[in-house]
Image (tube, rainbow, N blue to C red; front, side, top):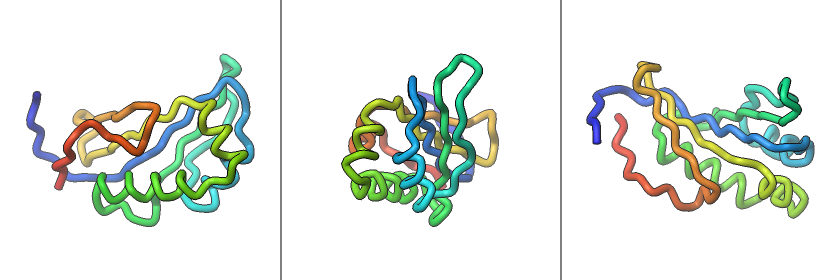
Length: 115
């Protein structure tokens, strides 16, 4: 394990899917800052959202995303199940950017200690 001294910048939540996810995007857009939502050149869909309500710590921003996801409609949750989610924790030094990934956002298998 590598120790890095850095400051927290923000947490983005990226989604990739083989098909469009309009309902999910609409509901996430109402609760988060949408950085982009578009079809890529290879035909997959990619979206990125930022926890613009907080941006004070990774654990708080991740909790914020989890609360938003827990409150999604059944249609949006079905679309979420068809995506590959990846939260990205940004620091003030992009060389030290870390990515957390996993299908279940309710269980992050790391202990975050970012100031």
